[in-house]
Image 1 (cartoon, rainbow, N blue to C red):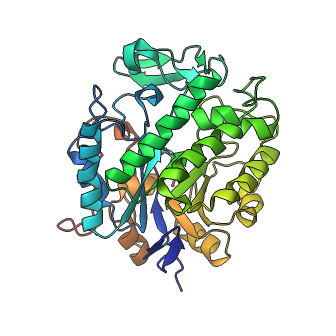
Image 2: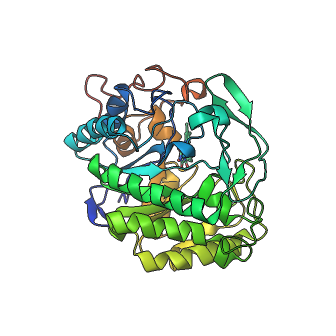
Image 3: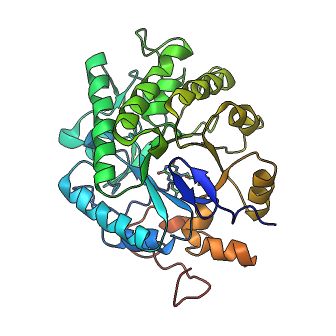
Length: 357
Ligand SMILES: Cc1cc2nc3c(=O)[nH]c(=O)nc-3n(C[C@H](O)[C@H](O)[C@H](O)COP(=O)(O)O)c2cc1C
């Protein structure tokens, strides 16, 4: 019997199935004001067969923007546009959490208010580039946040949580994966601070725990999740002892009674799911390279409570129906992952083209 299509309890919600749509940046917001365009509501509502949708990464404050045409949740105009998204998703019966993504040093002055320097725990320039309005540009040396500035960033996450709930989201996910600001604090390669936010893991985890405290104050633990991606090594992130780092972090998470822990793995030989799932007291969301067989096996063995699908959901608005029927899947078109407009966004075919499932 299929486990995917059985109900599951995540935080305060009972979801009809265990299929979760992964957070995916799609760069379909206006670049000047971070307001999602009208097609965003269509895109998410087409995918409302998921038990839970996690939105693309959304910057909590404009200083956290890191890629061209990504959306925010700070201004009234952004909140109003997101309301149309959550209404459309709720009308089709799914739940949707907003992912809060502060990019930290994975940014460029041309993306930030008044051409500001990107911020980070330490002034270490990452290798690589980001997409800006004028194409790909090299990362720069970031500004090292002062303790007072860290408090402002944390307050920004709290305000963003409040605004996300105001916009009708069912909860919020802290993006602590993929080498963005929370992981920059957590990881020894990007955090060389000598104060209470750097050095031993107890200190490097402090920023994430402070942000979660702020988010939980607004939403309650049962409407907050967190995403991590141990050893993904994306965006020039590295850690001297990732197993010890994530063990410590996950043990600390239990105090918050979070809705879920979302762990995406990308080919690391070490089985972090086996390490972390037994240590966490909420629902465990497994992601990274899943197909139907892998998801079923993990759910059956109790290795996860829900299965997160990214690129397959991007390319198949009716993914749940296709998995249920064993239908073939559309292939994702990488060329349009981050392009503007409808192509490769809301025009992927459903099995029944007249009525996306
Ligand atoms: C186009 C695209 C954009 C993504 N953007 C984000 C993002 O904003 N936040 C995030 O946590 N992960 C992001 N990811 C990673 C996915 O959430 C997911 O972890 C990854 O795609 C692995 O799942 P999959 O193998 O099912 O695609 C993105 C992935 C893709 C393909």
